[in-house]
Image (cartoon, helix red, strand yellow):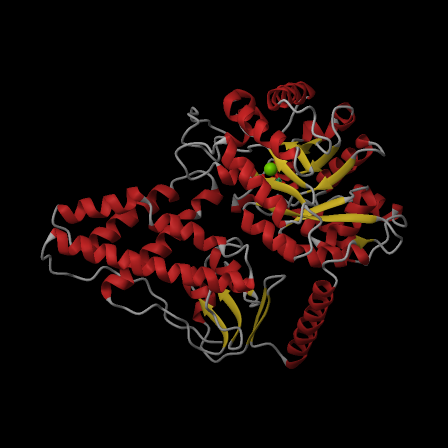
Length: 541
Ligand code: PEP
Ligand code: MG
């Protein structure tokens, strides 16, 4: 292992000549960093197009007019460029850190990363590239550093800090480098040169392993590599269980880039387009035309396969600047998902018109998020009927209508919903948080929020039974990508798994290795289990 010193740059003491000269220095530094980020984006896109989008977000932050204006304002009042920039970045970072939603809070890390890149340019310090061979152990990495790690030299990455969704970890993995995050600061005390073994899939870290352990881990790594290769080789073939049941393995999308990555991974269309990506980070909602263009581009990238457009799923936890919402004490229990859409009718109706227009050109499924009652669904369907009338070309032939099952109440009432929908898609991320009363993203209750808790499994079973034989049941939450659960989900009756683009090949491979019909005992054991770990144990055996 090796531990390079990766330290933040502090703004140097600088002479203030004139506001014009300092402003020009700052603008030049920003231009240089923009060029660097564009090149990092291109490099990353070669390995993993979907992950390259991380750098799109960095470009947006770099050119954030409020941030740049705040720095220039400080320069006007006599502060040198580096300090002005550092202060303006710190203020924006603090704003993101104060946001309730843990996903949005991570933007602070991105602002920090971009801020550091500009500071380095201003201080004339070269980019902090990582040089060394073996397992890299470090507190945290900038995305710009992670994106250019040399997979020939760096065998693995251990971050003392970070989170599973941290961009450094995602970018390292995109280069095929296993990464373990949030290992704790004790890991930094290990002396360079000591042998360290890590398992990127389980997070296991072994310091100074004996030869037997090393042998075992090497064996596991080469078997995993073989499995990965096999999965990639047949990624573009359909996936059926060994006893012949076809399972659709679709992709979850949050950008047109994702759709391209999904096509490369062999996805059977998309089981979830998180359309809110079009609405976040902007002052005005997208126009109907912009939505139409984007949805068509996604369908196009997937060769005209069916895509499932989830209507806007935001709320107090993901506020929009153009939707004034009173502060809520419990935004996850508040005006969110379909509830907000029904309260913001113009926004909802515009989106429905865009979706209906697109559905006249390509196969579309529309899906409503966070549905709780049949009445909500019926009201949403009235809006959809009005949109069909307003577009004026009759009902699109291939349009299918479904709901997400994310609220336990909806899971329990599946049979009542079934006559009004074509399909159900279980959002296990939210269904788990609501069933276990454990907020997703809150690390102190993360251990409780296990989608394999028998209570969640019981609700999934209830959905499959309530849906009846003619309504497809999909899973589009993270559980769909957990290969340990594939057997159980299919045995319960799930017939579509929608996962992140890169998970499509391994999930297809997992489907091919199971049988759909020979498992009543397994289902029984999982439903009767008393804890998530007992369900896992039953599935691993
Ligand atoms: C879910 O809740 O499982 C889901 C897929 O939706 P999101 O993660 O976008 O809330
Ligand atoms: Mg959800």
